[in-house]
Length: 255
Length: 235
Image (cartoon, rainbow over all chains, first blue to last red; front, top):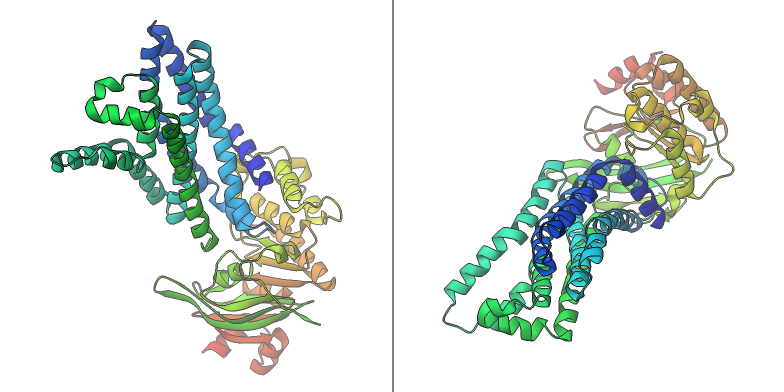
């Protein structure tokens, strides 16, 4: 498993896509910090960017890599290695590479310019977010045979999490406006890894007062230690469950 | 001679298409067995089932008497050369060989005859994506033989190889047979099968139509050439 991870990382470092991604992230972060003297505002801007770009690149890159390595996976399956090791190895390899890009592109600038609780929250949630979208990418690619369909499904997942989900939540709130929805909202938030990450970061910024009663409830729930533990736990669930499903599919998959 | 691979009532369908409809057969060591059949007759599916790349719907594959479905350890005794070998684009030939040795955890007792015969060492710095189809085939063939496995499965081995390289490979097949190995080969080139095979297994629409030795086929039909003998049997 670790050997497969090692060779996946070696293969990825020989291509330039991930280096471009690292530079893009670093440029965004540094230019935001340079443009605004207010570090907190900078962190909010970075959060916005990170919540869109990081999931998108993670899911698309991991899906494309899976399909590009498909024939190689075939070769590996004909070797004395278990299928679980092959898929987990590739997952670890891709995760390692994307996390390294995130570390250099986002964590280093944030640590240099705005080392604070909020900064650390961005680093941790951003990393977990990358992992959960790589995990979702593996699910999308093991479920489909065709590269175009796989990438389509991956984009649909990203589209759902970053745009459609918010629309659905609004619709839900509007439809059931007469009922007390605060607890339901917390549950709903868990259904979207991006929202989980975003709320955790925003609550660190103490601007939840602007978010009305629900914001206060969020603050009460997510703002304390248990809320943070819950959010991180849910993010870990978002990494583990899709990957577990994809392993289950891959075990029976015809190559 | 002992039966090394045994297949029992193997069934596999892809959606509505039934690729294998209950295939049973046994393969012995020291033979070159050619798996023939028209396109889409289930040849590749059968090979991939043996290698565990396709998971059959029902039936069993035994390797030396052990059921191998959903296991992987037996694969260290098998060398496989795919129809189209594709490898990580950014990897160089030398790195690919090093990686396979690392993955198989074997650095000694290697069989590098084909590596030398195809002159792959002089090309070890070339990236896989720059290679022609024929050179890739050479790499695949050399990789399949590298670990000196007791079973070699070659899927259309000479397609795309230049005549000289094809000769080298055919010689290698004879050598391996002489060492008492089992070779499973699919091919569409009758003259070549005629030259190297001991037994012919003919698949048709997912079933074994016949599994007989080459000599037997020739004597019963009275034909000297396999191509003509086959047409006689099948018509």
